Length: 335
Image (tube, rainbow, N blue to C red; front, top):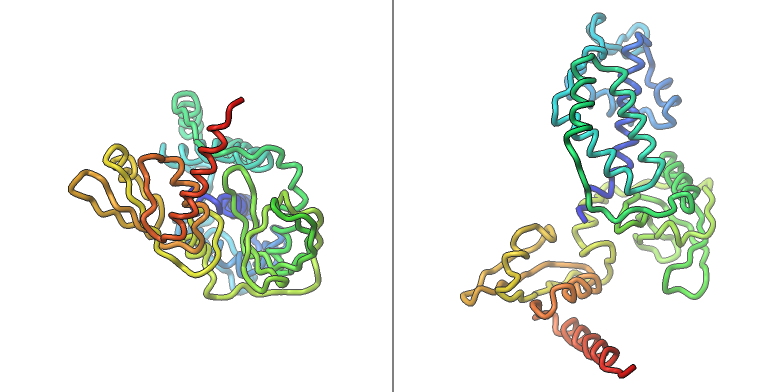
């Protein structure tokens, strides 16, 4: 799964804030950075970034030094005549489709965004929305979230803690852990993967950055301890180091051979940011990636069996061979 897609809820929240700020300006409300930060429960720094983003997008926003307020530079400018093109409208419709998979609150929020888009645009754009909604059909293959209400409390607590840069205390029991452990974590970000929500956080108990599944968090509370995300931490770089979500140990190069039967399928897409493909004379390909942790890519190779062979590291090859032999024993039993 593309790591960028895992940040979708944060972008949705920001998009909602930007649209709300534009609507306030459109209603001729002159707002200070303090009032905007308080209204949207965020920081002044985020508001400054929002204003810069609006200016970069072509909405001329000016700052009145005497009144210490922001408003549209052109007093005659209005959003009511905003003319969105087909691609922009399709992005909204596609976003609604994606939001359906990651939890009902996000789908409801995107439905609300579309209603507001219809309300705040002219007849021409309203006609485009109706036409595209009727004729352009989308289906997005994302493993859907089932039962967001079961982790909504955890999600809300973590987003609030991230907004305030406060650590949270959790009771956590992983899928393979026999008992619950108490931990204090500093949440760095949320991501969605294979129908599940996770938080990337610095774990004080383990003294390292880890991923925690929200459905494995049994209880949660925001503490009075504050934290700062390291300047060298980057979500994109973090996800590059693993195959999907698991990462551990030192980086290792994994080398696979794919037979000519499926080589063209492997070459069709980018599976990992570090991948390198070497074509062989017999039509097969050598596939190389650098990863922290090899368990997930091992599982992935089984999907392509028997047309995929692990070449290196030798430990991974031996591990896969033993699991395949065990699988053969399971299916070889008579019933």
